[in-house]
Amino acid sequence: MTADIIDGRAFAADIHARIAREVAALTAAHGIVPGLATVLVGEDPASEVYVRSKNKATRAAGMASFEHRFDADMAEADLLALIDRLNADPQVHGILVQFPLPPQISEAKVIAAISRDKDVDGFHVENQGRLAMGRPALVPCTPLGCLMLLRDTLGDMTGLEAVVLGRSFNVGRPMAQLLLGENCTVTTAHSRTRDLAAVCRRADILVAAVGRPGMVTGDWVKPGATVIDVGINRIAKDDGGTRLVGDCDFDSCAQVAGAITPVPGGVGPMTIACLLANALTACCEANGLPAPEGLTA
Ligand code: NDP
Image (tube, rainbow, N blue to C red; front, side):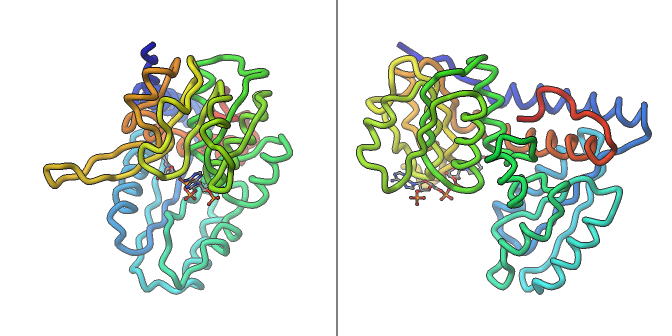
């Protein structure tokens, strides 16, 4: 069997287009322009690329992009003061502080400082708690993107066995909660799980978010399963360059799975699309308007 490829790039492009239409309609009907503030501290090259892409996508969707950049020696107090100002700014509906931060700044303090209503990364303890309680919340972008791809691929997931590999607060844990919300029977596996391969082979839905290149091989996959590969790992090529691979060994998994996301071009593009979706949702909620359907959990 050869799996269907889940085209996250095309799906994300549709979401960007949909959000641009929703933003235009919001502006025309109510004079509201959703605004997203991004904060980049330091010169980490990967972070620079991510933030540039996020700012560009924000502007392309017709939203206002408020871009803040600081040197790596920025004091924690100055960043917290900026967050206070952004929390109070009615033009800003979402705040994204790019991680990792330099060591003198506590990421936990930054997450706690961002208003939960503007927490478009879904990291605030209140949003994570609401998600765990099955209540409406701003949900971390990457698992929200995975959920959208799964809904599109499978429709109703009631009763399916789902295994999430990884238990980070930004991917694994919220992913497990979202699948529970879809009425799946959910197992969360991690580095201490015994016989990982056997656990994975039970899964109708297998989400891999471990950061280990090619760890999941075809013999871990139940025939016909839907495999979502969150991993983004840069590995060396024979010619001295590098390439991106996922946490799943694509070739062997695709022989067994019913559907699979490639890396790149699967989950990756969904993350920025869901950031914009969260910014739009936050803006609608701030203005007492219903959030557009299909862009939330
Ligand atoms: P973390 O490092 O925060 O978490 C990794 C998780 O994997 C941990 O729960 C860890 O278990 C588990 N794990 C590590 N090694 C093993 C192993 N050998 N067997 C079983 N479990 C293991 O990573 P993230 O969740 O932030 O990211 C995971 C991957 O997803 C990375 O490749 C990252 O680059 C990618 N990513 C992609 C995004 C996208 O936009 N597509 C966005 C975010 C992340 P334990 O808790 O026991 O240590």
